[in-house]
Amino acid sequence: MKRKILILALVLAGAAKAHADDAAMKPFILAWKDNADVAATAASVTDKLKGAGFEVVGSYSPYPGAMVVAATDDDMKNVAAKSQFGAYGAVERVAITRVGDETQVSYSNPRYYAAAYRMASDLGSDADKLKQALGGVAEFGPKDGLTADDLHSYRYMFGMEEFDDPITLAEYPDYQKAVAGVEKGLAAHTMGVSKVYRIDIPGKEETVFGVAIDNKGDNEQANDQYIMKEIDFKPLRSTAHLPYEMVVSGRKVYTLSARFRIAVDFPDLSMMGSNSFMNIMSSPDAIRTVLSHAAGGDWSVVKGN
Image 1 (cartoon, rainbow, N blue to C red):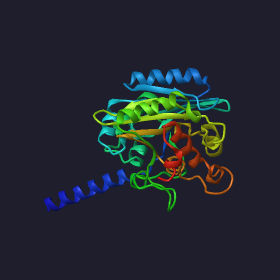
Image 2: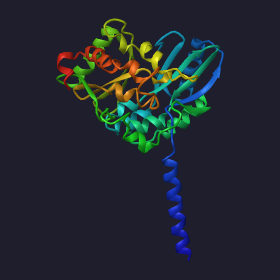
Image 3: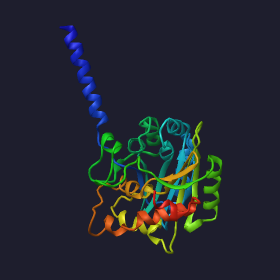
């Protein structure tokens, strides 16, 4: 009898853990809201992150009334080193956004992206550290969240890209030349693309660059502000969707397809109608074009990948 009770207890414990692991998550977490100045709040956020042991690696204003602060720590980088293309998950994005008379502070949910980017850990320790440093009023984004299993194989719809369908932007003789080539392209502000941050993954030939896109010319549809104006319209803003990433892994430069990168942050965005994917239909190819040029790639060759 005792053995049966023990077995039942173990089964129930396993079921409870599976249920917890299957809990729905949302991509962003609201830290707090007040009416403070955006620049002053960004400075406060930076101090809080540093005080909690994070390394602040960059910041930028994608458009008026918004700031994004990028941070990392040893835990995130070490998990990234153990994960295939783990560099995408090596950064935390904290956003300060002015909406009407209030200022919203929010950040990307580490557990959500650990699942979406198939990381070797759920980054739970970083999630807890961020909550302690910045607060955690509520997760937000889509009406209904996604489970870790949903995110692991996420695609917006049949035929669209998943996480493991990266776009090759450029190819170099070796890793060092690839990193140098990206640095050169970003420093030149090629096609309106510039560097927000750089994180080198330890023990691995892999580097992630966060990039600002302010192209307003032939590829305006790639512009950060253009895209967010169309898709980020809910009362709680998802500014921590930005910036996009370029990853050097070995001798190649990659990025996630925007059809995945945007959709995983806005999974309930409709396909048609106002504030829909139809309004940014040209953006994925436009993003690919400007990032390819910024990476030093030959677009006429890369577009066939």
